Image (tube, rainbow, N blue to C red; front, top):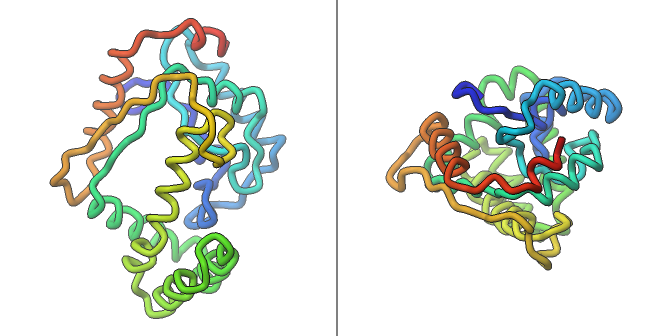
Length: 216
């Protein structure tokens, strides 16, 4: 967005990061109705002849429902960019975003809520991995928490990216082109601006499908 691109920040408008831990470092969420209105107000400012960048979210972002028409357009986007970031940079970013000063400031009961969020995932994580993550939270080893959960989320996101309906089954194919954008492989910290430039460059290489114009 700082580079002049049109961005619909769904997580920002929903005040939630979309995962089981999306509540961290966020203000209370708006109602689904208010969220949909905010999405519409933002969309009205866009020039639909140009690319509009939007996170590949699911049908719900925390307690907010993604507008159905918008969600359908997202799943039919002509271009899907998967950003690949080195593991060390990802782990550092996760630890800072989910257990840094801002996270603790927003949630005085942060540790208790973290444990609750992890335990609600026991059917998906399994007992051993759940216990490992909970113990790491209680001992303050947030890097271990990130390492324990990241593999699960990577598989989940990969299925979501490939699946036409976005329901996580992994069946079907997206109609748009899926391209990879890789951050420098030796980076220990994420350079968001560098990645942003790569994404914008990739969008310029992709033909602007007539399907994109239908978004208006």
